[in-house]
Image (cartoon, rainbow, N blue to C red; front, side, top):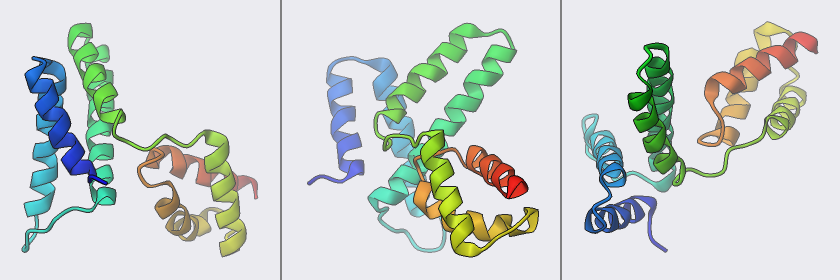
Amino acid sequence: MTSLKEQLHADLTVAIRAKDSISSGTLRMVLAAITNEEVAGKVARELTDQDVVTVLTREAKKRREAATAYDDAKRPELADKERAELAIIQGYLPEALSTDEITQIIQKAIAESGAQGPSGMGAVMKLVTPQVAGRADGSEVAALVKTLLASA
């Protein structure tokens, strides 16, 4: 089985041969971000597939935010480019969790930790974050945790 990084390299080669400038440009940016992550810190390291998913999630979030900013600035052509890049990146991410699935994970974590009220948010997030990593937006998860703790 090939690693996610190897798959990205193989797909980049295919995109270059097909003269697909959006795909090749996006994959180059993603691979550069992965390489930067590998050499960051004091010691260079090889990223695991989970680490690569984390980098891809970060890059997807950047594209989402940039598309929103371009929409606000009335630059639809740039927003469309960001959305096209986002679609390519999302093809490599695991399937996103639904709000119901996230809610179930949070409720289980609240029961497990015995957290009550806003002061228990840290304990709940500590349990929830590893389970939803790369499959849900952190700000969305935090908002749901806050809402569920307030109603508990």
